[in-house]
Length: 456
Image (cartoon, rainbow, N blue to C red):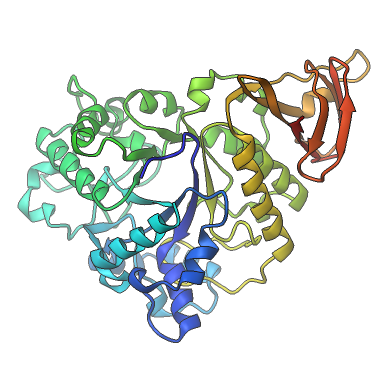
């Protein structure tokens, strides 16, 4: 199934989702027998792909290590006060084998899930972890040459350069030719079962980062071009998504990824910063970014921003070029993000009004994001520089501008002048019709206010 240029992806925590469906049905529900109503719920209008996070077989040894970690146990208890032993499955990123867990329906169940999604015109995204594997992965005994070892010959624990090692995983050697060949083979096996792959911590195996982390001399060829080049021979249409940090997005785009996480935008929207400056980057680069406000690693946006600010941020990420990622529970205003080790989360009252608003936004964004995107600089006048609070961009076809998005991303009113002449236009968010033949276009927005203009 071909992908749209600017796909919208909906992330599901597979263990939590199936657990809730099972409790509601009074029987075990696997990926092979998810009710049709449940598939409809997670594929609303505007969603192009579902990311089933955490389908692979988890490690019993990794689970035991996690259970013995008091810091992890405390985080489990904080997220789920009535924690039970059976709620802890182990980390989905401590992969024992790239085989779908039996409790989720195995590979046959996944195949049926993919067919159900395809029947709805929706693609399937799965994970690949290039940096490390579980301590009981078959490679540990069959291919010891795949791993990084310390001065005593022991396999190193997996890590990134800025944090302590992860206690439940072993570090793969990104510079090993044998491992690179095996990684390409594994990636191809994943691609055979889905339409897109999200590569965990993709920057860790780039030559520069890996060499700095492990004080090794890199080979001439980068990891990803070698591995992705092999993949493309048999799976040319598989979309590859890089979880990327530390300003490695551009490099990873050049190394073969279709989309890379836009963590810089997330940080500036949530923590404050120059969003306008970020959006001045070259349009081709913007088109290769994946925008998000939540995922399984970031806090729930309802706990980070006010309701109005979160909605304004959602309009921003929904209408920019590139891919968009939404996290299950975000639409309903959930505040608790369970650790990925858990198969259950606490009950929370859904915000049905917010969910309806998000569903409308998804549908509208699909109409808006067509044609050529361009940022628009809002200007002001000497005694009023509130225009600096405004974010604006246009989407144009060959016949001219079709849509204009304006967001006051601040808690103060803002006014500004846009170098546009729109004539008659309708704000799709509230239905208001505007007639302005002047250039520049005057706009005034209340705190966190938004316009989503459709030009007649």
